[in-house]
Amino acid sequence: MLLAPGSTPRIRITRQRQIILDELCSVTSHPTADDLYQMVRRKLPRISLGTVYRNLETMAELGMIQKLEVGGTQKRFDGNAATHYHVRCQRCGRVDDLDLGLIAGVEKEAAAKTRFAILRHRLEFTGLCPECQKKL
Amino acid sequence: MLLAPGSTPRIRITRQRQIILDELCSVTSHPTADDLYQMVRRKLPRISLGTVYRNLETMAELGMIQKLEVGGTQKRFDGNAATHYHVRCQRCGRVDDLDLGLIAGVEKEAAAKTRFAILRHRLEFTGLCPECQKKL
DNA sequence: ATAAAAATAGTAATCGTTATCAAAAAAGAG
DNA sequence: CTCTTTTTTGATAACGATTACTATTTTTAT
Image 1: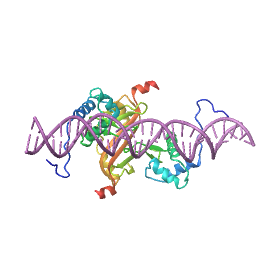
Image 2: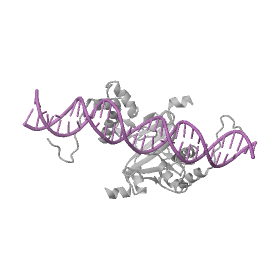
Image 3: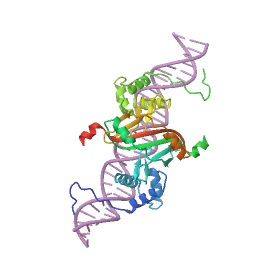
Image 4: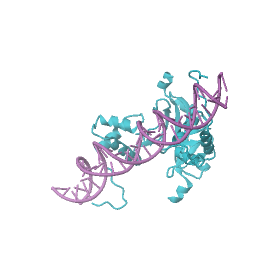
C-alpha cells in the first residue's frame, strides 16, 4: 500500500522504542541520551546509541516525552510530558523536578510586552544539591 | 616580581578584549560566539575564533557579561550583566529581551520545596517572532 | 507469502567548543 | 630604556555531543 503524499508515517512500537520509553519513565532523574543508552543496554545489549537518540527525538516530537534544554552541554530527557519546573546543581549537573505550581499568567504578561507569539515558558533554578553543599 | 601563590592573575585590557566587549555592548541582540567573531573581524581581521571564545568566557566569569544557555545548539552572550528574561523564536532562533520585572519571591518559594541551595533562576519564553509569524 | 514501509546497528561526518603551544604583547623592576 | 616575567594571542588540533548515512533487518499491510 502506498502512503498518500504528505501523510505522516505511521509510528511503530518496536522493542527498542518501548524499552527506551520504559526506562525513561521508570526514573525521576532526567537522564541524558547517553545515560539512557547505558540503562537500555542492560536489557538490549546490541542497541546502538544512534537508535537511542533517534527514538528520543521522535518521542519528543510526538509529545510523549520532553527534551529538556537545561544548562550544561548535554540535553536531558523527561518521561513526564507535562510542563513543570526544574532545579539544576551547578556543580554536579543533577536535575530535579520542582513541585511548584505553574506561574499563572506569565505567558499573557510576556505576550503583552513583545510582538512574539508566546507558545510556552520554562523556569529553571540553579543551585547546589545537598551532596554538593556538603562537599564545599 | 613574583606573584603570590594562589593570587588571581591580573586581567589585561587588550585591544581584542576591548573590541569584543564594545561590539557585544553595541547590540541588543544576543549574539553567538561566531556572530561576535564576524562582527569583531570587521575591526580586527586577524583575530582568531579561539580568542573570541576565550575572552567571552573570561568576561562572563568576571561578571562583566552574561553567557546565556537558552535553547538551541549555540550559547549566546549578553552585554547586559543584570538578570532579566528572554523570549526565543523557535523557528529562527532570535532571542529578545523581555521587559518584565523579575518575579518576586520565586527563589524563596523554590528553596522551600527542595533541599537545593538556590543561587539564581532563569525564565525563558519560546514563541514565534513577528517575522516568522508572517512566514507561516 | 509477498511487497512496501519503517526502523535498526554500525559507522562516518558535523558542529560547537576547548585545549595546546610557540610566538607576540604588555607590565613591572632595575 | 632594557631585561624579565606574566599574560595573551593566533593557529591548529582535539574533543564531546549529536546527526547523517546506509546496507540490512524487522514490522506491517495486502
